[in-house]
Length: 307
Length: 296
Ligand SMILES: Nc1ncnc2c1ncn2[C@@H]1O[C@H](COP(=O)(O)OP(=O)(O)OP(=O)(O)O)[C@@H](O)[C@H]1O
Ligand SMILES: [Mg+2]
Image 1: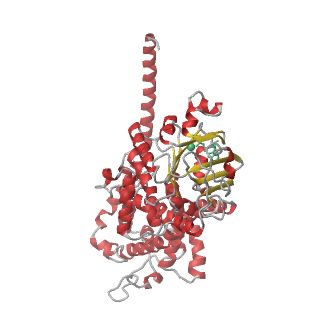
Image 2 (image 1 turned 45 degrees about the vertical axis):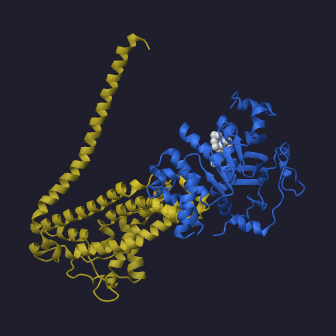
Image 3 (image 1 turned 30 degrees about the horizontal axis):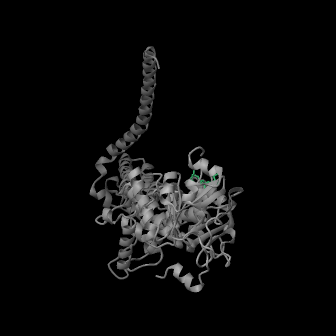
């Protein structure tokens, strides 16, 4: 490079920097549009529903009088449905993911299954509702119950759990696997001692993302016939007497947060709109809390697992 | 816990498997015949004999009819230009290729004294891996504690006794010259160790289960000169206890640590002999060119 080239190079660098600045600004604007929209929605909901968020709001059943109406049956229903969803989807999804990744022979059938699992994640949720109405509610006779709803949402998030499990397993480097096999471990030992523990943070993150999608689902739950007005609680899953657990609640009628919200928004009175906003605010908080847990897992559990 | 090796030895009488040095490369295919009772140099028995071994990655023939002995409690170096098949040959010894579809073995690798053909489909690769340990190019400790890394081989063999595991972990770490550096932090994560320490930990992990053969695939290529020197020294010490096969790109390293050297080129074994002879007086021009750096 010659000395007289230096001004030219400086000019080129300046031009490149201007381009860089341009992109940074464009990116920031794009980001702000998304974030601000969400913040505005959230703030508006919080503002509209603020007065209604009192302890009674959580401990009251719905009522014809807006001021006395609460979300007790809704949040309890959401919690119990989520419990069934997790208990059904997590073992099935994780086991399927591990099988597909570690055990399945690589052939046409496996390929077809793989493609279908990925596609299932994109099926509209109401289709799951329709399927569940036929299978869980009528054929299996589970009725319009927490069990049916939980299983429906379990089915809905199953592909998410399977995909998360597989991606998480795939991120385990080959040389870690080879180290374990090289010592004479069997496939099951490698799976139990290495694959599962190392992919667990990723799997849990996937599960929580699936659950936070499920908790807001309305369409499939309405399809299977959740009640929109419900003034009782299901039997408690844990009791003071032996055997301390019971499963009566599984067959109970129920409602969930988004349905309660939907019910209130369809009322003409202004006061019920306030309730809906308050319930929406709580629902978003529940989702954010779940995401916070998944972020916590990513940063704290995963930090011990590196290669 | 009964080691597989002793079990096998009691089942079968040890075949006499000793060979002559100059006949080693060419005549290796007759290695396991009972009449091959000649001795190498000072009379080193053969631990494993590769006989007419070919290997295919799918349709690609990566190794072409290799025959060579691996002498017991000696270090055998595999050298040759990149892509000539050194890793492929090494990984065959503990059936690593079985983990991936489409790979095919032809020929035999006999492990003495029991004459087990390592490549026999009837021989469980897990049994092979329990007898033959492997240390990889990149240190690959499990993301667990130092202690758990070394104990893992014992655990998968069903060892439950805590004090027995403690003892063997200590012994293995001593054997890998790592004990003094980690004795007070056995329960710290293994990934917090330096690269050279991690590699010695991987060696300890193999040593804990007392393998008959140790395989090293370029164990120092990811390490600095000081860590390299400590690994080389370790290999030198281990020589008395275990049979070692090592792949290396470093000619000085091959000359320093090995007793025997195999020079490979494009999937073929070009020359095999005592390291002294190969380095001082190679029989083939290609070997000489490679060793002196005129090629490769
Ligand atoms: N998984 C694989 N599938 C197909 N071909 C492979 C595979 N692994 C290696 N090969 C090919 O087999 C030949 C031998 O490879 P190998 O890794 O044994 O070489 P190497 O001597 O260890 O080389 P290096 O010194 O670079 O490590 C090469 O031509 C390589 O491209
Ligand atoms: Mg290699």
